[in-house]
Image (spheres, rainbow, N blue to C red):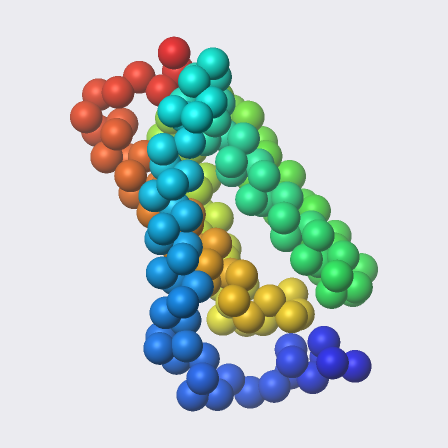
Length: 152
């Protein structure tokens, strides 16, 4: 099966940082745009917009796990997505630092997922998503440190 072959294939020189430049660059661009997303959804509080983004990106991995087809991968990704959804929900009314932690935590999960190949056939997505997560969490941390109120 192609998914098994890719998952079991040893890492090659093509997996170097040079091979990741395109997904990392586009992830940074999308992260900057996503950081400004509360301006497009002006009727929602910024905390709500960032929480929706965190829940959405966490749920994407459920689709990837279904594509992978292994039941234990689907189960793990559903549980992990659920954890990020809870963090996002609490971040809507709780400390905005939870949203920063959730986004950064999701970036770490992306990077680990890329290195381990846990979900098959996802070479470019985890580095792209990690870049988005790290850019948004970093910019959000700066906004919080400037004293901005994300809850209304």
